[in-house]
Length: 277
Image 1 (cartoon, rainbow, N blue to C red):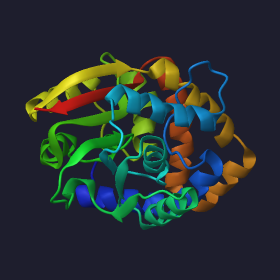
Image 2 (image 1 turned 90 degrees about the horizontal axis):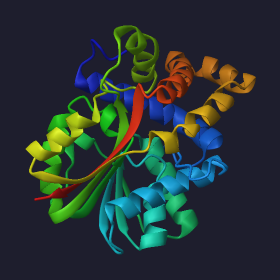
Image 3 (image 1 turned 30 degrees about the vertical axis):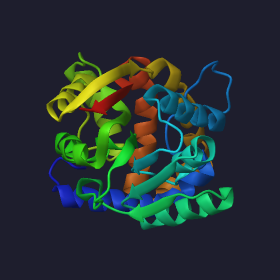
């Protein structure tokens, strides 16, 4: 879908996708639009999604009361959790007007202070700095990932943390596996490309960050996709996707491909914590 598109066309496609589908995502997946972290494998999907936020906040050592920039905030659930549990002062940004509206409603429902704005992640208009940047399942959507990491340096205070969690491609994936299982993920998830975690580490180090932690949590998160396949196999979901258009059908194909790709570790879930030098 994105191979011959410009960066602006890609962003418009992502905005249109989430404006249309976010209410359906909430009804099917809940307010957290990210993978779950399964400690025992017996957790509900909702609990596993919260556990991912807990795990990442602890891994990144986000201090209480931090000013956190939540890039690609989705429906606002992570920002709300950070405000509720760590007294953080989150600011969430997303391309989607629909998501901003839903995020504000969620914050009001939980009676927490969290700010949400429509803003392009590659053109962040903030003069102040943040204690931490939180970016989960979002960097892969950006056409210029390396450039974003370079530009993000100015937004973090000295010794501040950048928490990056995203899908990455395994280091040795053959052409046939890439075509059969990785490309459907890229297409259906609206990702211009997918890179190995070593690329993220290198880009951070070239952008005046020090990588302090890099972990692989594929095994703890891949049950997400086993459960997601069960959801998308429901006849009512296929009927809904058919009514919503080609991109929604591509998403269903991506979910099925992701289950297989993560089981074989062709696609992995990587977390990198970097500190501003």
